[in-house]
Amino acid sequence: MKQKIFKDKYHIFEIVFDKSELKYTNVDEILNALKEKIDVHPVIAYIAIFDQFAQTKRVDGIIREDIKDAKNIIFCFGKEIPTPEVLAVRPRSIGVAELVDSYVVNFLEAPNEQANVIMEEMIKSLKK
Image (cartoon, rainbow, N blue to C red; front, top):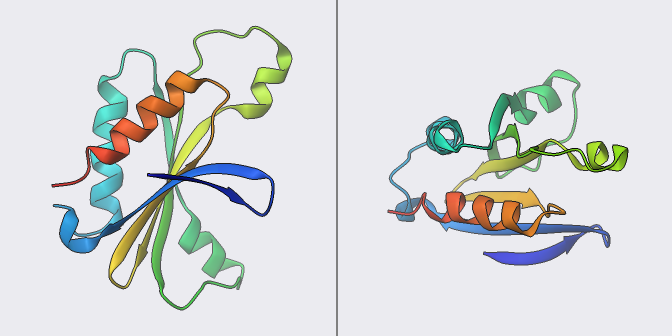
């Protein structure tokens, strides 16, 4: 998993899996595997799946030619509200994009280091 800065300001974690590295054959199967991990976690609350690919097509947006599917699983780690500002950085999401030969899985860095560790572990567990 790599840490990188997207658009010079967004700190993200990202991993690219060759399709042969995963036992899953599409984005929905990957999201279902992540949802199973979310559902059994004592703190994380599942919210929804967002189909970014369908939304972008619906508005006649631009999709890079090699992107075949792109969805986010949305969830929240929130177990405290120490300040109103914490609401600006919740909920969390993990994005999964299918390219021709790979899957790109990424998330925006959370202010809670333990949340980053949990999301990274969930993603790494997708590998065969």
